[in-house]
Length: 275
Image 1 (tube, rainbow, N blue to C red):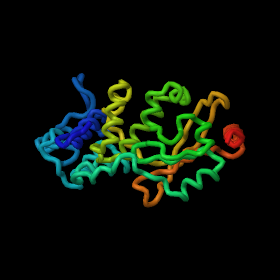
Image 2 (cartoon, helix red, strand yellow):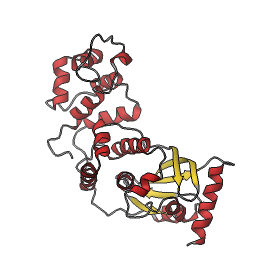
Image 3 (cartoon, helix red, strand yellow):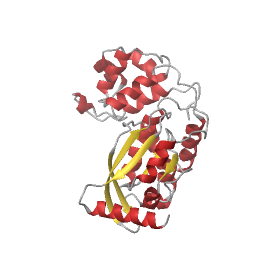
Image 4 (tube, rainbow, N blue to C red):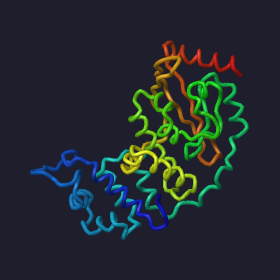
């Protein structure tokens, strides 16, 4: 994990550079290249900066580039808005003070709301710790309950992995969303411990983490393979909870009239019967 001397900006720039196909930015390539992606000199030319300056950025010898420089690099790397915001945040100065560990409380109104929803729903914090969950969510996955961490379970719990028919795709997306969520607060003790544990236990996590992918914390499609209900094609919504230090309300729902909607109804009925 990162420390006070970590070169997070340089690592991100290098990871993005290695993932850009020269042909995608209009460069003709002749002969074999020893390394993937763009050369530093090519990035500098495309971004309108000197090669020496770009080298200093990657090496961490200059950690305060201007926003226009970073925006030029974002265009070269074909970053979407979420990844561009992340890039800008890496040069925005030191992160805010780490939050106190394990002191977060779910607002009472949100906790009450969870009990009224007939859909799987839970509250997670910026590190993807589950802070509260309703019965349908725990019926969808027994690991969705207070005290668990979604990222840890997706990588290290075999039963949780089995829920995802497209596990690798889901894992890549979750790590990218996690980077977006924690931003530059990489010295938060909870984040350091989580990334350290996952890096030690999962080679696939190490590979994905090294890619430095970032995606927006937003809703999307979610596919499950439930052991009792079978395939589920769901939508996942992530709704920010105001005045909560980054907590999100996560809700799963299905298209009306589909088999997945009927399965969710059965899930709620079963969860209600066992309360």
